[in-house]
Image 1 (tube, rainbow, N blue to C red):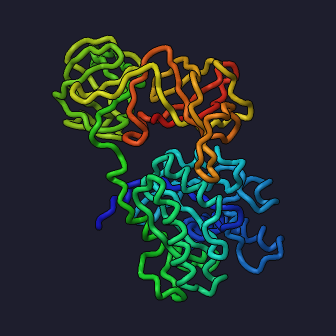
Image 2: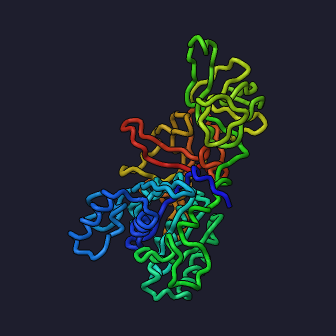
Image 3: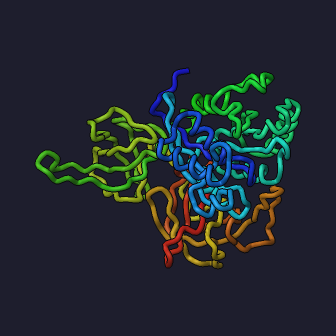
Length: 418
């Protein structure tokens, strides 16, 4: 299968503490020769000072001083690397339950999630928690890496038993694509190169899996959504009467001549041109950034959304949302927050807490109405003006939002529209 070497894959790693997430990423970077010489030299020196015989691969990602001292990951560490086949952005997220919000932040834009399982311990509560969050965020591809196979003598039965454990739990979730790979991040088995110690495993190693993962269908190509970011009025001699509406296409395809509707006004027109710095296009699609001109002079501003007339999103001031509360301070009853959805910003209120999810056992409680940090709840929001949205399941861009405290300007919650 031919892969576009400019295609970008974002993936997140998750697992319990000491499952080897940082070591796995270090191994990926080290074996794919994606580390600068000065970085490698610094890590080698640090490893020697710690009295280690080889290179401590985890240090490539554990960038914060506290993390290095404790040997754990407490923040989302982003790393970038490229192979001849693809570009990658890695989000290394924390394993502790108190950092659930960090995992949601790191996973919110991911095409794939790598969930690590310690071969000695199998599927534990934290594994289930991370699988649930991956399902909640509708991450299209889940790769379960059963790590530390060297500590169970590369036993195939251990691998098969963990697959059964995971599948028994994940059958209750909405996960589209799950793959399993037995690895040893410390020794490099099945990470970049196929393992000689596990000839019973016939699948591809992790890097090859990431390089060939089909992500073209991850973007919604059906529903045309173009949130307007700004209005371009150059007023130069060359572009004296030019009025273009600039932004990034959230989903779908737009073509010259398409009949469109502007939300919130409901006014209609046709696309006159689709412009970029490199010239005009006959069509554009997500996630391209373009400027669209219309045949009619319509009052459009930032926060409006251009959609195809025969394919409109939902519009409502009452929106049901799955919220992850991110702030140290609890939610204030009936308090007003800014809701930021695509390029639109307006005031909203948490009208009702419908239920809270216990992510240890997936049970729902309608009694506990308090929103504390890391809580995942289903709520009803009331907005001052209608939001134009799709469900998060259908469109991750127009189905997501954040709540902001207007006094502190802090982001207090991330939401997925049901």
